[in-house]
Image (cartoon, rainbow, N blue to C red):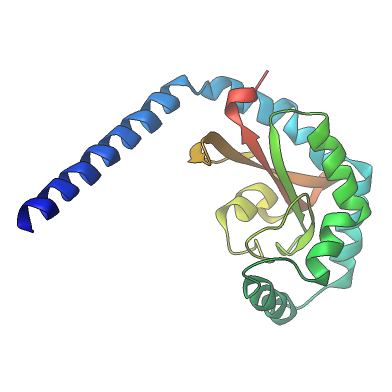
Amino acid sequence: MKKAIIIATAIVFVITLVGAAFAADMMKKVDTKMLNWTANTQIAKFGHDKTIVKAVYKQDKEKMTLKQIKDKDYIWRSVLSGTIDIMNEMMNNDCAKAAKALMASHPYVTEIFVYDNQGANVCMTSKTGDYWQGDEGKFWNSYNGGIGSVFVDAVEEDGGKMISQVSVPVMKKYRAIGAMTVGVDVSKLP
């Protein structure tokens, strides 16, 4: 029995090493200059889409309290499978349609989700894990207190793809009114 456990442990160790080597090899192939260029020249423009700006501006004007946002987030995170009405609305509203059009015209985009000036979801192309993004670095780094800036997160393996989340501000004139996160399959960059 001890011998079987030792062999099984050795096999798991070898598989882990092979997986780590594969991930490291993929990271070497990631052209970070191209990822950053794409983020700052192409994806940053997504934050100026008129339909998305209008939807974020409208939700900002609702001035939800943090308690209201956290209550929605609690309900959202409790949905382990399927969707509920608020999720379906956010995947089918005008903002989501605009995000899906951006996604369709950029083959490297895997998902888009948009949030307001507090980090509460406004729309998404597919279900997100939580409603409130306001407690995450991608929100703080891209909304940046209304100043707005592009934030390129680390590339990670996700379902056999190398994905980076690029977060950009949603801009109304020269002020950030929210932000959006765009999943980027780095192997499909131009």
